Image (cartoon, rainbow, N blue to C red; front, top):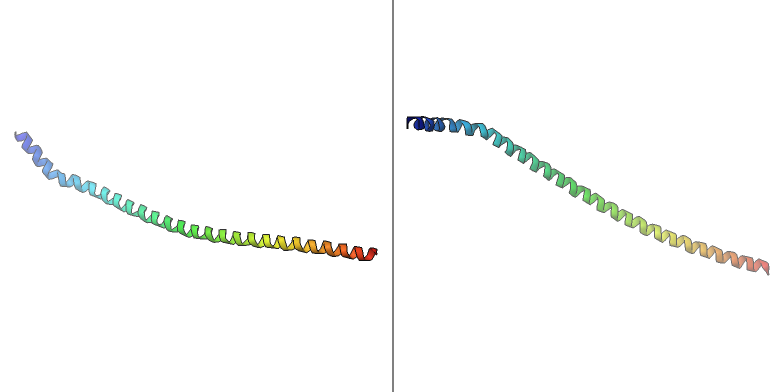
Length: 95
């Protein structure tokens, strides 16, 4: 029985010391967790910014494609008119 009492007393005396030794690790884990959360939030902010840039670039590409298609149509129409005028000129010179 006295051995149990000594062990219990030692446990009571050293328990706070043992827990104190774990607290810095817990604090370190919490600090690490907070740093990871901050890093994650920064990455999410960067992702949102890059998504906005991608969307702007998509809109710009769509605009350029529309302009290109319109220009191609205008060039085709111009070429058709030139061909028609050449035919008319050749017809008038051949007569």
